[in-house]
Length: 133
Length: 405
Image 1: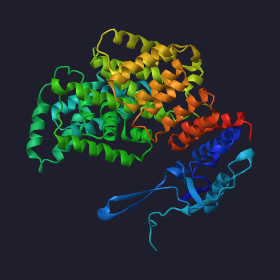
Image 2 (image 1 turned 120 degrees about the vertical axis):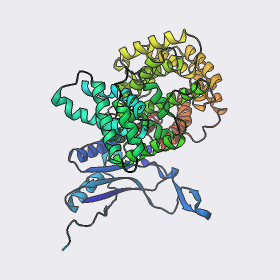
Image 3 (image 1 turned 90 degrees about the vertical axis):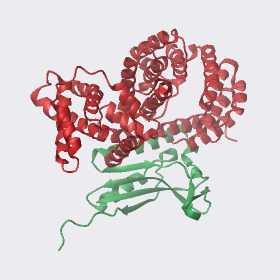
Image 4 (image 1 turned 90 degrees about the horizontal axis):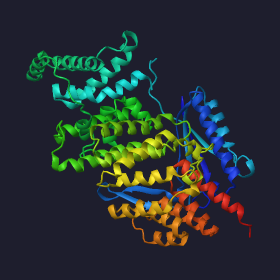
């Protein structure tokens, strides 16, 4: 079963707060994420995963007249949190997806203290079962 | 890559050229050649490499194509008869290398850059769709569709399998060089850590450009592009650090540079520049050579680089050239001159490179607050993770040196 793990970060100034950390903390955070990804690959659980550019660069798009794109600039003051990145993992049980999410949540912040960021975990829709009845 | 894979990739364009000549249908011939290359990867390990591997591949591809056309006989009677007649002919005399014709075809301006890249890697490079998809980090089905749409576009645009007319050859050759340059950049920019699949793209671009140089040894720009790739690629292992961060030229461990590639690139560009008729790839290669020849960053001949950028900017209106010219000017005349020149660059507003260069020049000038601000602004705009790590840590280092208010 596949799960999408969406990592949310506090909105802050519209930019990533990591920008304000000392070098050693930035490096520790990055190494943590690289190791997590390496382990997911090694376990054969990694399907996809991407980090996103900060919300200061985000746009809102909807169709206007004749379906033409109407693009509105960020930042979006009303949002308290924003999506910083996501993983899609293929795992045997929901518990395994939660365990991966919990590990991601312990990514270190300033002074090496875990950030405890919130991850939204959603099962990905799949094809119907092969046999009926 | 094994020796046998090397051989298959090298033979791919020759085989495809021969099959297209015989059957005329580029799209179908290209599929048949892919099947023949695949058959070879299965059969050769058992049978051993045939005495004439090229003829073996042509025969297998031709057979696939005939089978397919015969199966369509009811619908396509006349084509099949024509094919059968052509097959009865004696094998043609040794055909010339069709790499050049195929490159012109696959890099046709009617195609978007991403389609041209995919088709070139498959038809000329002999890579499988799966390999190309891996390199571009997209699903195989997506890449297959991109390639098939590219072939459809070639068919509908009536692009012929022959060299372009002499009067349009120059423009068409620049399109080919641009596609090869994009393949190289894609592989080089992304060549981080263990990302081997993408590194392969830079190697492929060099291999294809080498083949093009072989076909057109007198062309200065082809030689220039090959030299530029070699001189840039030589620094590949020094470009990223243990956390995946980008390491700029000035801070690289030059002992990690590939001396052989540098020697080849320098020899190539030196020979080319003496032939006259200078173009922008040659100038960029000459600049890369000046960097590569300095054993320490502080030994770099910035006077020479500034002069070369001076010539290059007269030749193109690329704002990136203006940006690099401003850096060279700062290195020769001081950061204030560089910052002034940046003011007048148009067409780069909001680009992270402009902020990054400003940050460097402010740092050179000792203006740390402004430097931090611009490093962070660049970090928030770049889409490259290694570059973002680099810019963010640069700001962190400067902040650590400023006493807190």
